[in-house]
Length: 96
Length: 96
Image (cartoon, rainbow over all chains, first blue to last red; front, side, top):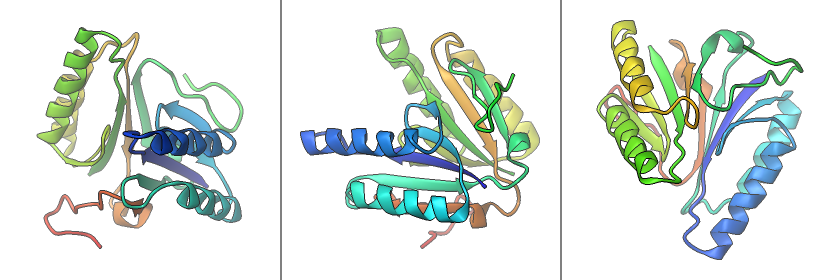
């Protein structure tokens, strides 16, 4: 399933900067970065649950935010892009 | 229809900072900010087209990125949140 993961991490202090790096690293390992803090991840439910658990252990729930959007099987028709950093298809080929 | 709008604006120079402010302002007028650069907007197709035109005139297509995700009528079941900044329902009441 295609899951869009968007995050805001409060980087006012060094702990925040460390959390931000860790969140990005966890997402990079599981999906395609489409913006600085937005990833599209093609995951099965078990993989999603593992990634979710990982992310929710990293972030500070008082100051940071994670949002997951389940785009469904028809996800390619749900996305439009304008400008820099064109999307790459996580199934393996470049989308134009 | 529910449209998720996510943007990355390159703020290396003052023009970029101005673009970022303008993009945020245009989105604030049309939806609910759920993260720093992520908005959920309940729009009809004409309103979406107007907002899209506005945003695409503001950004620099070489350096900035806009992504639109059409979440469909079943959008409430497509969203999960963890951490700070809980979501507000753009239809008017607070989601818990």
